[in-house]
Image (cartoon, rainbow, N blue to C red; front, side, top):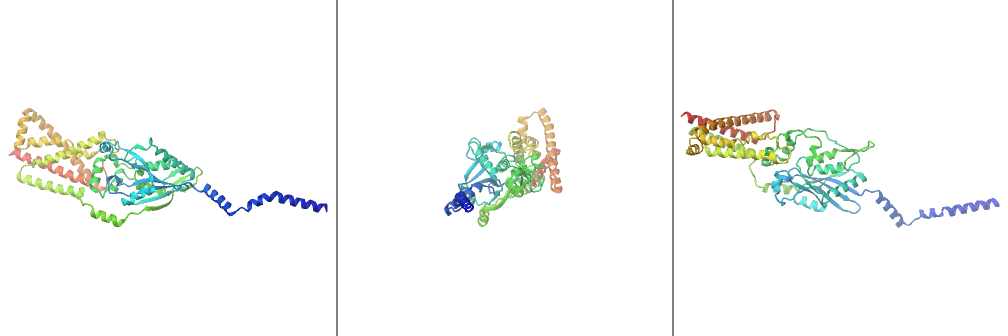
Length: 445
């Protein structure tokens, strides 16, 4: 009997001991849902971060696309876009500062809806790459972006090749990773000029202008990192890039890619049809060469030179040469010097103008000689003219030979020359040789 009583007391004690635990098991449904919700909120990520890549636009500054970073706060539902490509063309002396390479760009921040409305209005594609970031990496990236957006940090000195709206997003993302950034795609050597020509071939005048200003360093091959100065290269690189953490684990940088804004192709075609057609630079150069040949043929028939045409030609070429020298010396833009386009657009041509006037038998030429030069000065000037003339001819011949080798064998000797440069070189050579021929024949007479 005593044993039974002891057993009963033990059972009652155990029931009393475990009753609170059993009570917790039978919580209300509302309480259970709150617990589950709190657990999910604690384990779910706070941010979803994406790289946005915008397609090319019609303006010269939009030929190479654009890059931005989208930050979505999944808890507060905030959705912002950060980009490093804002500038104000109305700021004082903007064009002058841009020429000198002293343009300041600014980091911008705007709601994604506002960003989307703008790119829908200007009818440009925007693709999104969602980044595979850990919570700590995402928080660090957001903090870095917020620090960059502070008034004292948001302005920076823009550099077309080395510090722009594409290189900055790459650096801020890479510096936020807890691991090593691994390039996935195979490295293909390409020069700076290759990439510039790739995205400007449709705009022949802009393409010629850029090739005219960019010097020999532009033809050097870029490194993998330097290729990321273009938004489209950054997008392609991110698609195959990986992150290797300290434990040796590897994960892809991008977990999803999609198109968030789709261009209206019908509207794009209509805009192209409504745009004013213009003659491209190569065609214009060919027509100018034909005109040069025609004038030269007439000069041979008349045995005299068309003085106004040569003066205009030499002034334009010579002044362009001075512009190239100015840009090489004073501009802080990269890869402008040395620029061997000076072989064609040669400031020495401005000296040849005086020689042509003096040697011609026009009345203007005689008045110029009688008023400005004595016989002794004339002989010294004549020797100088011959040296300058021979030097210019050597430059032109070297450029033409370089162009022929470049186009025939796809090999750049000292610098890439666009087809327009070759055609203009032939124009200049034709006039220089014809003037010399005509003046010699008149002298003999």
